[in-house]
Length: 230
Image (cartoon, rainbow, N blue to C red):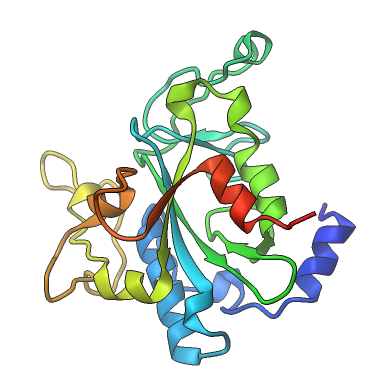
């Protein structure tokens, strides 16, 4: 059940995109889903495009836990990549082993740095409200890095929406197996490409600040900068 504070925050905010079910969406192609959200926002001009950011979530090992994902099971997190314990607290680790539910090793969401006192997250793969108040999304989906082993702690690459629309390219080859078969069905529209590239997804997933576009944050720094200031 939605908390009253969350419902009030969402009720007082005009969504930048249609309802979740009406958005362009393909399972396991979150980078393209967010690109399509950015494209919609640019086209309809309800908010300035510069208020929006594509947010890539990953780390050096490309193995991250996220909670409240549609591919999760109850209160268990989704861990992208392979079976492995991730919790640093022995009492938690003994109760939970994070299990891979996808071949993905990153996730992409959309951030709206709104003019009010609360920012909002758009995540088409989440069971949380769409859009969701930033602080609620962080608390419910990320929990805290303090409960995770160092190799599972999340980093953020933040790219302005207009820059993302201009630079992102994917030929979807990362979603094919060794035999060239699709691991998951691709979107029905043509591949996204630029004049300079047909495939640069790895540059966005990378958490090396010397690579790609945008800025790289440790998760706590990202939360400090964009969370509600008390």
